[in-house]
Length: 184
Length: 210
Image (tube, each protein chain N blue to C red):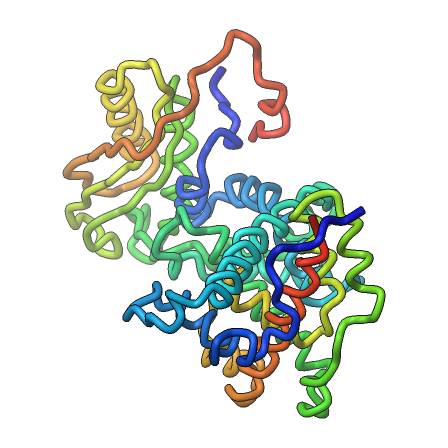
């Protein structure tokens, strides 16, 4: 009866224990949040074999920076932001923005609306629509709508002019709304 | 077989949105629709577009959660790899001196090691788990008075006062035995409630065993 499972503990308590140096508590956080972080990384980087590495780096950075976490209850959002920076570093390394002007005119494939229309739930439809967006649009959309970054913060993180970020988001919005209109 | 959508947002350009861009509408929403703009509030086309943006936002996070459910649970060997790569030193804290056995010795114990002692002892108290342990005072000075703050989670349905007092005694005892800290007080703060225990042993308990 003495060793009670730490899995009953909420994120705030686990973050506190981890900050105190408890590896077991940190392990519970890893188990709990890895699927969400992988899903986020997959959405940002695509399905690559980098996913394991980028999520691992996220947890190692998180462990080292536990002192900076103000509110342990927000550990999930905090992990997602650390991960988002790691993903952006990877993207930079790939030099995705060789030609900024070209990025802005990319569009979803012609048969994208059909694929979205086949989704069985609204969530699946959004997921499909996002997957159909050109990479740069998807990335800025997720940063804005899921991580709630400002235009300026996105520009800074992605090393792009704010005007380009606005342009990408504008296209992303229109594409997402149009794609989702086909879904009932 | 899909029904026609009553919301017509064909071009999403200002011509269809009573002079507004879709981005202005998104920014208006971000600003909490303040200050009120009647040219948006009274435009049916803008209201349709705003509704579409709101629906999209609501399902964006939801879809990420749904995508997470499609991901396999974290791989065991991958978890071991992560844990092998984190550094305990990063969380070791201050060096706390112990009383030397000989004048030439300068034995120390890390703050992290002391917290670990407190955690292990406190977790063994029935109906309690340690949340955090803070050492207040100049612990780097041998003999300086120290206040210990222990935050705990308590099993719902147990007597909180009894649990808190057991924790206080247990922690004071382990620190007296294992360290040379001059403990002025052990203060216990209840931070969280644990779900009530069932009669069935928890199958997860096995993997969590220290």
